[in-house]
Every structure is written in C-alpha cells, then in structure tokens.
Image (cartoon, rainbow, N blue to C red; front, top):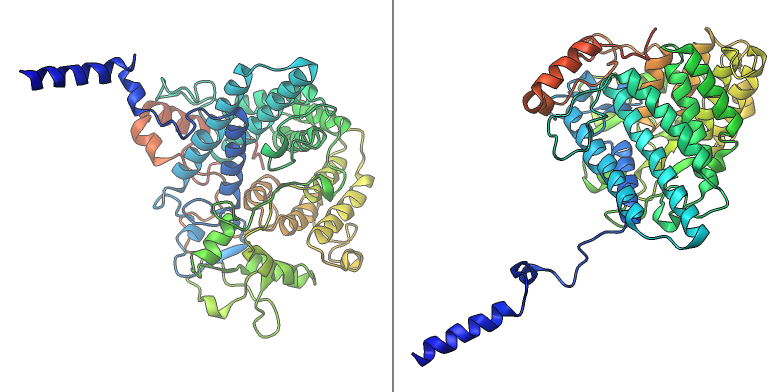
Length: 479
C-alpha cells in the first residue's frame, strides 16, 4: 500500500508541475517562432535557387531556349516535362516555398511593434519590397501557365482554389507593383543583411521594381496597348536600371547549402548531363561573338562546337558550359541592365514613352556593351561595327535584331530567354524532329497533381486558356 501511495504522489507532482501537458514536449533549445526577415530571406533563396538550377527535375528553360542540350537523357530537350513532373515542382516551389514564405513574412512583420518614425518607415519599405517579390513570383506563374490560382491562393483552409483569368491577374499585378513603388522611401531602412539581393538598399529595389514594371508593360502591350503604354511610361519616368551596378543578382557562397545550384548539379553531382547547343553556338560563331568562349569551354577542332539540339549526344564530342558557371559562388542574374536597354530599344521602335525609332540604335548598342562588360569581355565596339550586328544593317526587323541579340545576352537566364523568345518570336528556334510537339513550347502544362486533386477547377482553367497544351499561346503571346 505504501508503494502505491508513493507512486500516486510521484505522478501527481510530475503532472501538477505543468498547466499544460504539451509543455513537456517543447524544445527549449531551438526557436519555434521565426522572424519576418527570416521568412523573407527564405523566399528569396527558394525563388532564385529554382531559377538558377539546371537540374532537369526543376528547370528546363535553358534547354527550351536552346542554350544547352542534353546528353544521355534528352527527354526534356524533347519537351517531355511530365515524366519528372516539372510543372508540379515549379508550381509547388512558387506557391509553397516563395509566395507562402512572403505571406508569412508580411504577417510576422505587421505583428511586430515598430519604434518611432524610422521604425514605421522601415516596416513600410519591408512590406513594399515583399510586395515586389509577390508580383515577381505571380507574374512568373502567369507567364508560365496562363490562368492560375490567385484570389483564393495561399489559404490552407481552401485546398481546391479556383483559377483566375491570367490577364486579369496580370493587370492586378501591375497595379500592385505601381502601388509598392510609391510606398518605397529610399531614405529609410528595410531588410539589411537579410536581403540577399540588394542588402536592404531601398533605392536599388525601387529601380528593380520599375525595371520589372517596364518588362510587364511590354509583356502585356500586344494584349492591351493602352495599359501597356501607360505602364511603360510610368516605369521609365520613375527610374529604371542605368548601369550594371543596378543588376538584380543573388550572390551565392562557397559552402553548402548556400552554393549555386548549378555547381551542385554540374560539379557536386559528378554528372555529365549537358553540352553546348548548336543553335546558340552557331549563331555566336557566325557573328564572331567573343562571348562564346566565356559561355562555353572545351573547343573541338579549335572552335566551340555545339551539339544538335534534342539529340542523344555524347559529352566527349562537343563543347561544354563555360568554366565560370562551374563556380560554387557564381551569382545568378534575376534581371540586368542589358535586358533593360534592349527593352528601351523596343520601346523606341514602338514609339512609346515619348521615344522615336531613331533612339533604338543607341539603346541596342548599350545593351550589347553592358553584356560584354558584365562578362569582362573586350571588343564590344568591334563586334557592333560588323554589318551582321550593327543595328542599321543587321538582318530583319527590330524584333529579329533585338530578339537575336537579347537571346545571346540572356545566356544562363533561362526563364527570361524562353519568355522573350515567346514574346518576340526571335530567334526562329526550331523544335527537334523527335520533340513531343513540333514547336518550342509556348507554356507549361498544368501540374499532374492539379488534374487529380483540383479536377473541376483544373478543367475550367484548361478550357479557358485554350487547351492544356504545350502549344497553347497565352493571352500576351499574340503573334
């Protein structure tokens, strides 16, 4: 009896020490609540990691832009993106790992008390920068799929969100971006070191936002000329990139897990999956473009040699991705000055924002020069003097001239290169004969998971965009 009494007393004392039995399972050594800045940093890294990766399970845009092509496993180069569930992976990365982290960052920051005017200004800047990244992520989804969940997205209580019309979403994103720009105060602080792109520099973020707004204006122009023109004009007036020092780049480190994903895919994995693609290599060699020796390495017969795109190629017989892209610390370019100058050349050709076509050549030349400078390549003036490159004499209309040179300058910016190809229709890339479709894909098909888990909304969205096909042109892709 005495032993039973002691046992009862022991149990009583153990449980009475806590008002909540769950307290017994709390980890007192590790944080259970993250700061808003931490969620923001995570969203940045998740977003750029996906864009920078060359892993075929995640990122096939370099192949779609025919900058590189596969060796042993050419399925993705032939536009099979379902076996490895590439659309599912991108969808999840953007919604779960980027947009949800940004949403949580904003919630935590809003719930954190601020101190004085400086603290209020800092919070205002932080929320505006989060909004810029929200717009960037949603725009990437719309430009990839078309109609996507938007007004009902990110709600864990709604596992079957409806899809919103892609153009309607894009219009709203432009409005959100414009509002975010007006809220930025360059004199105030923001994320500091938690911002791995601009180190908390609000003035740089404002230039990025305007430069991306310029891009969005051009993207929607053929679908809505009035909105496109006003978006372009306001972006330029507010201030876009003016030099390579404005480039939005994500600087990677030399220790895992903060190395560039390309290093992981190309070096750490020990795999030999990619070679230079003939379409881009042949174009650069034909233009005597010295950047070809930076973009690629290992000449064959004294010259950089590209492999037939989409073929089952041998790694040993062709040139390979350039040495700088094998560095663990390689920064990834999100948006750069060269791209902005090409956009301004197009704005001039379209006689928008008070420009005339006579201004196009200067912007075109500056764009190419900026690309040479970024890669530390000399000879831009000589290159531009060639009749095949000079704006006045290069082949084709402005879309062909700008599109071809932008394609080259956007090397290793796979998503941007694929999107600009779709919008400008240059260069005239040709699908491989073995491809799943006979044209370069105009969009990703919807995730397989959406077919099975959100069937009714998927079916409605597929019908609304014109068919859930690789060949379906989206609302902005008019020509």
